[in-house]
Length: 258
Image 1 (cartoon, rainbow, N blue to C red):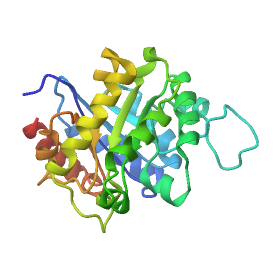
Image 2: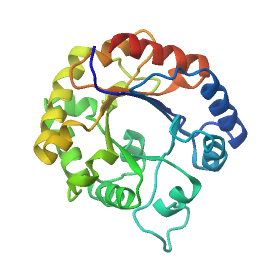
Image 3: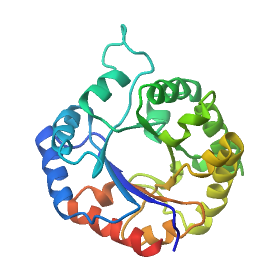
C-alpha cells in the first residue's frame, strides 16, 4: 500500500443549481469516509460556489470546494470573468485550470493558463492543472511531448515554495466524455512516469510530492486499477461521481486499489 495521500473528486461542469450543489455537499459530507491521507473535493459551477462554500465552513478541510475556471487579472474590464480574489473571498480552496473542454472549446492557450496558475497560487489557491493529448496526438506518437509542453508552460515561473499548492490532472482527451474510449492502466502508466519525472526535474523534492490524478472515463469498475498505477495519486472523476452513491462507490474502488 502506498503511503502517499489519495486525492479524489469530481467536476460538475454546467450542471446543478446552488440548492442542488449545497444538498450534494451536505449528503456527501454526511457519508464520506474520514480516512487519514484521503482528500476529497468537488467542483461545482460558479453560481453554486457561495452556497457550497457556506456548507463547508463548519469543516473546511473535509471536502475542498473548487472553481471551474478563473481569470489571471485581479480586476478589470473582463465581462463575465472571475478573479482569484473573488474566489478566495468566497472560501474556495481550489481552482481547476486547463480542462480539455476549456482548451478545446474556448481555445485556452498554455501561455494563458500559465498566467492563471501564477495568479491563483499568488492568491493562495490550490490549482488542479489538467494536461492531456488528443486522439490525433496519440496516433502520431506525441503523447509525452504534448503533456510535457502543457505542463512546462503551465507551471513556468512558479516558485518552488508554491509547488505544494499544485495538483496535476492527466486527462487524455480521447478518453473523456460520453464518447470517450476508456484508457487502460497500461495506457496511463508511461504518461504518469513522464509527468512524475518532469515534476521532479522542475521542482526537485517538492516536485516529487505534487499529486498526479488520473481522469478519463473513470468509474467504480476501473478506478482501483488506475490508482494502482505507479505515479498516480488519485482520480478526477466525471459523471460516475455526479450522485452521492456514485461518488462513494468510485471512491471506495480507489481506496481498495491503492
